[in-house]
Image (cartoon, rainbow, N blue to C red):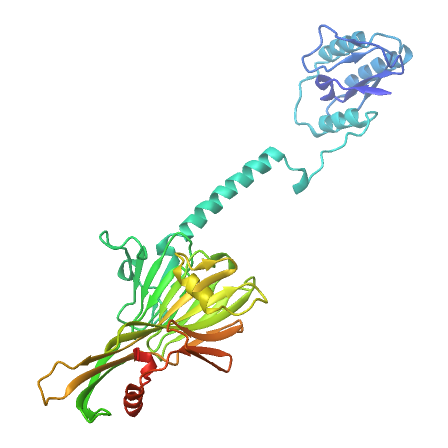
Length: 447
């Protein structure tokens, strides 16, 4: 049995139905029906009435009589039945327009569900959302994420300098762009510690470089490979004594050294994606300062700490610079040879196949200058500057694969000591005796 709902009649509780008949019978459009009438199919006609308290007894009796007449003659054309029903309701002055009456709503639901097959509801859940709407939402979120990431990458958001109370120091006090007349190879931004107890944090970004100038009141500096880190210079002190050399000639020995105030803990955060993009440069001439390298879990390979001494000048007027290099090589490979290290230093970016310089640490410079052009009988002068941090505090959360020392002097002899390699020539005996007497290493000064 197929229920045919007539919306204009449902408000008074009627449902008209086509009972049986040819399933393939064509649909018949009927003229004269209300606009709300849906469709009519051929077949035996049935009619049901759902009475309510809205009608008096005379109206109910007339409607029951009409229903019985239809049931007694089911072969009528359903369109005629509907027309007759409309005429009856008009005579009884019953309004057939739709309203919000609960009974009409119940009648409509009954008409739609009595014999009609169940209609599957659309599935719900995240996986059934409209793909186009999902794509639009994802694109909108992607744009928001890109904006947030770009804001986070701005220098003012990468740099945090805190004072002794933990409050952030305003960026315009500690952060400045590189001067227009500066070397283009200089870092793009400078971070200068305030004249109060402070902590400095500069996060990594591949497109921005920083020059971090801390001072004696800086307790800690945390930075990435895109930063150069340098503390305040030490105070210069000198001492002069008159001594005699091996030949009995008098000379004035001027010993110059420097002392520092305060101590700063420097932490270098190293992620695998950052290696090979930048090389951090750290000044660690203050022996009270510390440097710790904190490697990310994804960093692999071997990590080497290599101390390097190179000399400049000639006999009588020379200097030696000492630096430390943190270098990554492929896992399980041999230590870096002197030839490989020389090639590595000659590259523009500190990289070779399977080898990367991660950080370069400046440890200071020693120098000697001998002035012999003096009046006869007057002592000549020897000035010795001792500005090297010979015992730097450099640590890592990854064990060093090797710790070595290399220099650029001709390898006339090589000595192995505890896994560290030291190479150098044989200094002049008289100079060696002289330097030994005053507690200095002649090999450090080019002799």
